Image (cartoon, rainbow over all chains, first blue to last red; front, side, top):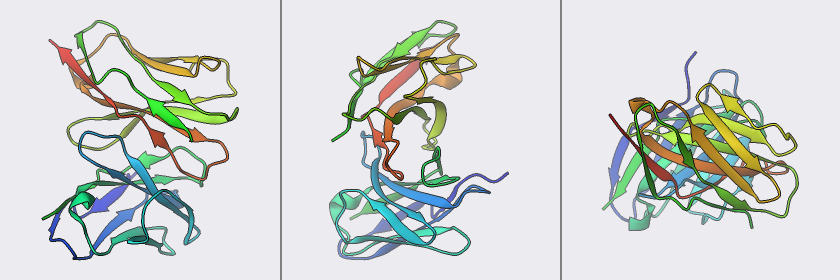
Length: 112
Length: 115
């Protein structure tokens, strides 16, 4: 039973560029949530996707956007990258919007 | 706003001993869920244990158990018979029952296990 997978594992970008991160949920899960984890901190909720719609959003600017596909996989897009966007980006999936979330290994983004 | 506080940035325990990690939270809601996640150096967050606020009985999962004090808004994790593989960052998290997915995490506690 495949768990949550994310790609790529690492990414280096420069300020002002755009980045797309990808997530495939655990088998049987239809909901995907994204989190940003800065170094030395706990994860912060970015948004959640269910039925291909953004259902809830944390305190992140519009530069952060996402998408969910019919197969439940999801993308996180970040435009106009800032140095402060450097972080570990975690994807979590759940059976429904309110069930327990299971995390992927994350994508480490470095913005230079 | 709901906040989660982990007051112990670092803890250490001798192998085979017991250790307790502390967590407090602030909420005005009565229905919510609490979690402990483990994040080893591999970075992947692993669910350790989950507690529903409406349940009075403390959750247990093998060597892991919690002490849930709803009135005190306290949710500590006890690890018994500590093993080297328990070494990791441990995060306490809160989610409102009315929230679709917004989990609030504490800053984490780094647990070291000494052989």
